[in-house]
Image (cartoon, rainbow, N blue to C red):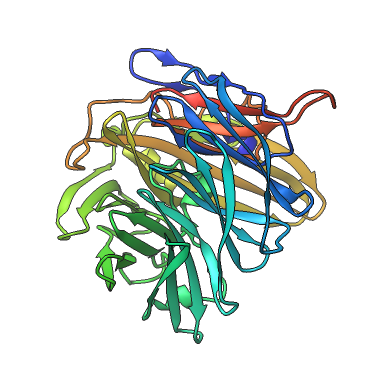
Length: 463
């Protein structure tokens, strides 16, 4: 499905804007880059290898100018590893007035920091902390110019502590929070750590467990609605941790409706002290925006029946079997959305709030038959003697004014997940934000041994 999703054109109002492709050549056995927007319009790119050479961590730093060409590059650096780790998992990255900082977890419990000087691009590696063995590192997340490394310590099946590590002095400073919600203690806990202004793939966006960080607060979300056979009202549950005051609060926000098509995951997203909830039942499709600080409703609008899709600010091309089917009325939208798990995500775009909406599901059947991957652009079939399954997803947008109280006048003719049938891009890439523009990045392997590995950036202007 990813190959279907990855290469698209974004049409902005009046004119068509094609994706821009830039391909700087970077030598070395490198992983996907970390990109930091630079103040002069260029970008500092941190690339690293997941290998060691003579006991060293290998990395490569380069800087792009606004045209996407390399303006400065530091030779490949081998940074001595003190902790003895041979492989590294990237947690998070931040920049400040001193430079660029990327945090890694070693194969053991060691936490490392690679810092790069903003002017010279020279890097250093430090072993910051050894996480106690009884703790499990959940991941890392950025909040402004701070990196937060999160771990949990399970006391019992229902009791768990949260540890939040931040950079301080020569190492890490730890804050501990007790009384976390019961789902946080689940043996299998794999939350989506949401980076602000990120693009989310449909199958990731429906994850009911998410962690947000913004404006000094951490939000641990358990967005689980009851099944269609339940009489309970669907509720968006989250735990709010105020880091400056060291306080923990538990909150619930009901969804406006529950009906035949309500699914048991997805639907809510936190962004800049606002909660965005998409909801639908057998007759209505709606979007609600609430203030987290006082609980007031900022926006709540739904469409039903033969209503046109005035709530949305892009067309809906819903994938049917082997063909896309255009949706023009609320009734048809709701009928097509019925089997799907709804999702929503939010980011800033040209001064507005760009709200991605849609749904995703996987249908599986026993026995022999075709295996089909269905994305917004079509179907890719293959065959299996055991069973067959297919993935269905759709996405569309609405655009709101920055205060979240009214829709914007902007429109998008299509989403970034459309016009994808002719994609030849690899599925091992990621979306990043480069100076406010959504950019897909991947490493292109050389055809000949004499060729260099190429880092490919595909930018979508206007998105």
